[in-house]
Image (tube, rainbow, N blue to C red; front, side, top):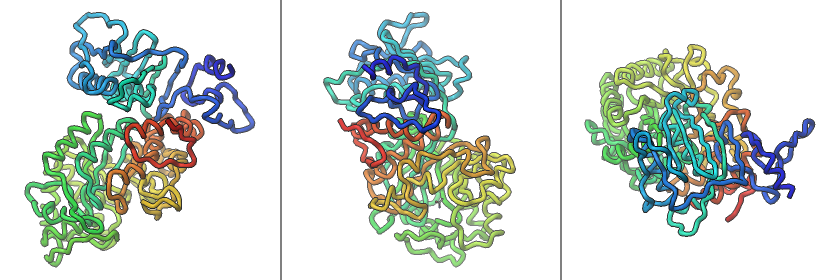
Length: 533
Ligand code: ACM
């Protein structure tokens, strides 16, 4: 009965998610969250929406009579989202979404997706969701917002929704009103496919998991000392030679143009922008092994399968090196119809400061001439950067110089966001040079206050890099990424004031069976009271 009355009181706001802990302010002490056994959180949505009211005593039942409807003229993107939702709810055999004729009223017991560009406060990615016992309405100003609203519907449903082939699942969507917009435009993940190669299907799987948590940028670290992973038409040796191995040897691999196009299209269908990185002038041994002329002594380097950094460098005084860079940037720019090109620029030990700065400025000109916006790791800041060049902070670096000139920063502090760091001293995979990062460490920080000279207004967003020196197969990647990537997603999406560790870990507890249903090999941190099925 106590639980009943607590539930009925819930005019729930985002920070109040555990039924037994709601509506009881205790001004002098930190409230202790109720154990899961005492009550299910009122909702378990990650990232927590900016505003959500749930009435768990009322619900909309999804069964085979429910239609997903889209307005006439909704467009290709909206129809794609509707199909994604019907597949989620009913599997590939589900009836296709229905298109309403112009002026036709919404049929009863339907899930309606509507675009309303006049709702400008929702921006590109916001949405409004209303669930009553009679129907569901999801509205957004742009298709991106509809897609994120669909992810919220997904997470309001029981985790059995993730079992596509299940026959007897009962899908009850609790009555809810949600208005939700993201804190940051850049909500990123990075995969290092150079140290170890994973194929296009594995990347698409990662994209699908990113989508569940409303992440929208996938940065692919496509070249490093150990491997070159993307086909460049004018430089076939980059993949034939440079792509032929990986850390500790083995076959390596690379994405053909067709495979890369497939990754880009798949990401686009999940509203995820691919950000290609070709790391330079260091981290370039795979290129130096493929083309002798990139070396000052014109001698091709042997392939490298170790994990040291800082030893390789392009011959930055040769004009032909810039011709090479232009060929690569031009080719990749044509393959990725998105605004960004990441040039790395990190951990350069073999150049003078002046050589390095001149190199970065020359490469910036090349990237700009190819119509792309340059991104580089924090080290590039002291160069004369264009205001729209983006700096990605990763350690005690010079991002603040770029902020002082009005530039934008992506926050990837290695001690918080590097998903390849071990969780604790017993973690078998991963490294520990930036520290041990338990789930709470990954969650409980504010990107706007981490660096005093980098305020919220300078932030484009946050990104979680996953370096792969120790990761061989997709299960390894998943184990290091989950659940920390979900924590990062909440930092990136939810208002700072709407999130706190105690309610997050309770919601995360219920993500466990969802991740299991999705087949994700995730880390069962002892900090989270995981719910088992
Ligand atoms: C980096 O971790 N070297 C950007």
